[in-house]
Picture 1 (cartoon, rainbow, N blue to C red):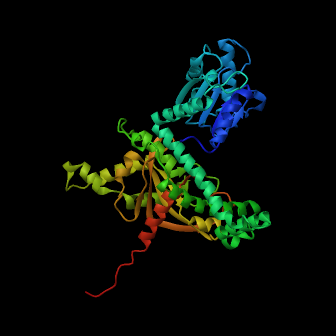
Picture 2: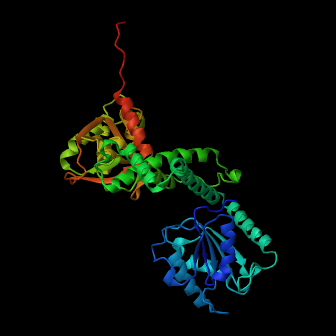
Picture 3: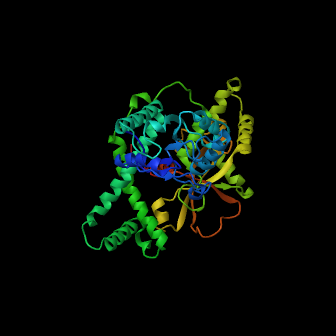
Length: 452
């Protein structure tokens, strides 16, 4: 059964005795859950519900009244849901039920359609609480069979949303991989006496293996982060194996071609895959730094000339073949300069940064170009790197780097950035690794010396 294993199940019911049977069943099946009475005093503060919920069991009537008005029900539900479900809580499934058959099932959907539109569930499942247990929480006859039927309905709903089902599958894989990582690393000291001392010693050694010689002089926080980085390396390997061989349910129902790809959607997704908004450390590996210094204009114009695809202009203007095209070249370069963002990218190896081995930061110059201008770059050159398109602000850009413009600069992350330079975002590790790999290939073309 593909139900969240990571505690992202919640129950909201003003009567603990009516929620307890469900809590017990979830515990029996090893599905951790959160319980909320609906009392605002014991709910997360608004905006502080950081642990996203994937499945929520909701009692519609939280007012402890036999027949509350629709407006009273609506007001209480909005107040509770606004605190339990955050704006960023997505995707999730709502299972809502009541004590009486005449309560307002459609009220919940109306709330999300008109008020809480920024946290709307993707799946609704309506059930009658009285089918499962009494007002005092006593199990009805055939309770076990009925509860199995309830979970069967949940799985059936998930099967109708295969993408959501697979996201839960992936989250469960991450949960199992985290658990397995801790077991694999710390089981060597489990049977030993003084577990605390041994565990602290092991964490120190993990941190030292990542930070190197600077570990001893690092702050306590930096030492812990270094230990976490080592655990990340083990976790990544474990998660890759789990992803390769773990059970994938309902796989055949996921992929379809009913929706054509939208370029803007692709650019938005690429932004998530390729870049991070982190920019607190201008010297961090992968940092993209905007250059607004007017003094650098001439240098970047030379970079553009060196990267410019003249053949593209020739193909677009066959009627002037054989004639000088310098005016067309110049005009296109002017258009590029009007829309480009001049950048420097930090390509220093990450291990050197975290181990504080850097004396000079390695940098590559380039620019961010709107997607329609990228075709005027020599993307087939060994010295030119062009990223996939991604969204930046309201536009779609690609990162263009000329590896011939590789240089070093003194490394001092504690000092303010030079005037005219400001970090924009950070490249994720996979994209940075690709740039570093191409830079290595560009600088290691040795050739062969021989006499013919």
